Image 1: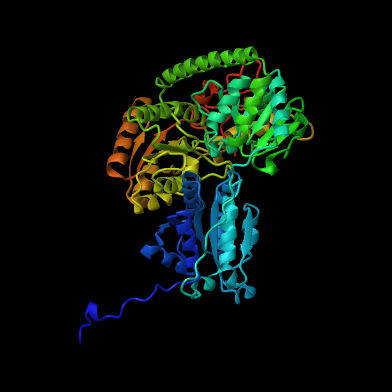
Image 2: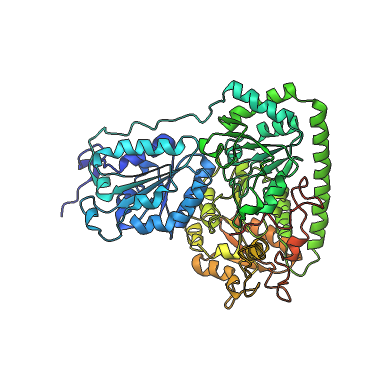
Length: 640
């Protein structure tokens, strides 16, 4: 056979394009460089497009759609741009639905592309096919199934526009997969995506009304919601906090750090139980609800005990989401505006009308309380170091020391799923920006492992935070949801530190059981108590999972078991060094103590029983945790 020399070949023609390439036009326009998913036959045309260098997009392969959804969420949070996820017909969106729910509660910009069966076949109810739009609609800004291949450009443009428009959210598109393979003419490109600026301001008269009410308050309190952190409005809210002298609480399960934790006004997150949340507003006459989205983050609720925010409190709203304004409570004043734009205007007016001495006295009190809090936590850490088992504060302090010693304050992201004991990680770690901290507002467990993948894929985030060190602290129950994520971390050569706090039980459910008994155990018409306060179904034993072994078997990831406080800091130091030097992931499994793993069973007469580490833990909220407060130890731990 005669060999054809390269110089004898005809010159290459223009690149061939298919309808799927409109998606890559968008990626170039928005500088999106990754698509997440689990491979399926219907998705191959899209995935194939990532193999063309000119498209500039990588395909990040995961082993479960909920991991892929979590990875897309992590990427979106860092970049501030829509992340793209491709799911496989009905099973794909069904597998991803719990993290989609989480995304809907925390304003993640996402584009979810579902490769539907052929358009002409769908009516016959073929393999894998169903009404996928109905599955996704509850948790999306827009959900749509294409019926005409000619709509591809229109639909993609609208989808990305909606995902990016304030407030951000997810969009779901179901596309018959044969549409993606249709040839399109040379020069036929998707022109671009309409951008709607999030920086819109408030009505001046409404600013004066709200600011005057806030300035006149005898005892104001501020609740900082996710719209604060997502707007990068720390400085603006801090100015208002000092102008009013008001303490600042964060909404429960904040998706980002919504206020700097090294500031004296910071009081941690709202409790996630009815009595605790009510106590956070007790004594306050005015509450400024700033970007406060998830306003009822409790699981056990008794209407006869009253509303979560007492009626005696005047509510003032600022949000970029109309739905969140007056959603659950009447507002005496309300502003619909971008938080970062509106806050300086409110502060300027407050400074004009408030008595400066009043604010100074409040600020001085908060500073004194913050000093007391610091001393209490130092004593608590000293006490933790003398225990036979590891308390969360020891892990958090070891991380803090390493981050500060290696000057990683602007180059680390903490991924939070330590739901049994969140306070040490929220208080001690040195967050430089809101997106230094990652969580979700939905509470559907298993979010952290997938998120680490998307976060680590991005070298630097929109708020200037680097991802040199990505650390996830995750409870043992949550870690068992999606350990397949470790395969993707290894496959993608992502260096991530995973710390598993293993108390061999569903501790948050143990606490939840106690809460149910406290609220309904003697309530008229209920009088319910369980057969036992120590049920076996709330433990994870016999057999007990070995997370270091799982990571090694699943992905060849190295790890280490830790059982005693003195081991923690050297192990954290070595693990961080390993991750940074090798670029590979590492798992630290830390043995902690749970209610059911103590020497004896929990005290069944004490429905509010908690572990010693929580019972002795100082509150973060120094304003509302006095001797007569309804606040209880560990009341910011998630009950789910």
